[in-house]
Amino acid sequence: MPEIKAGIDAGGSLLKIAYKENNRIHYKKYPIEKADEVLSWFKATTASSDIDAALTVKNIVLIGSTLIDNPFLKTTLANYLAVFGLFPLFLNNGEFSGAYGALLSV
Image (tube, rainbow, N blue to C red; front, side):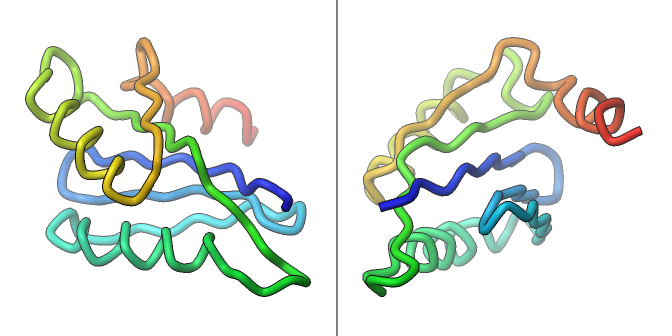
């Protein structure tokens, strides 16, 4: 099964997702209040059992300044993602990911 790569920024008032599928990068954003709903949709979408396009997600990259010095939020997100069989990756200096992505897109 091919593996889909995805990044999630759960900081601030928006949940932002970037993922690569069929060599195309997709971007989506949702109000943070819909995190449960969106993560459930994301897991269901990427865990398709369709033989022609089966995908599996194992690692989720979480970024954003909200995670700085916030072990409670990190633990909460890790526990929530574990329910779906997902492994969170917390980047060092992840609060600069948006700036880095903007730099790469120029």
